[in-house]
Length: 132
Image (cartoon, rainbow, N blue to C red):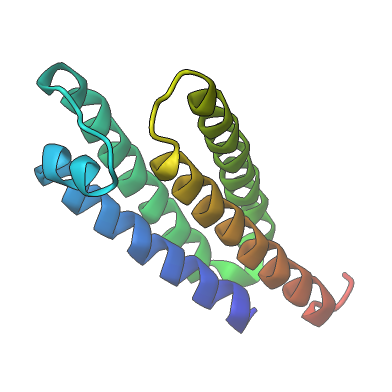
């Protein structure tokens, strides 16, 4: 359970960092990723910050209650895999219409790595737990 708890805390910290940076500085953050965001799109970036903050809170909650709620980590795996697939799809589609795919590939890779880390943590936790 220690590995899963650590993964949850690290991912929550990363989401919190995104929430703060994207929430306060949406233009510069997305420009640093290689994407120019017009002012009309900044609310969408800020909405991802709010969502990231909520997910970070949920990850901390699951980490604190890990002995009883470890299985809830599957919700984070499903979310991370969904984001990875959609990001990769967007990157591939961007190749066809000359949009820069780099931010989407980065998001796909990071999301897939988060999902893998969670799956490894869940697997180790499942092996450590005694059947009831």
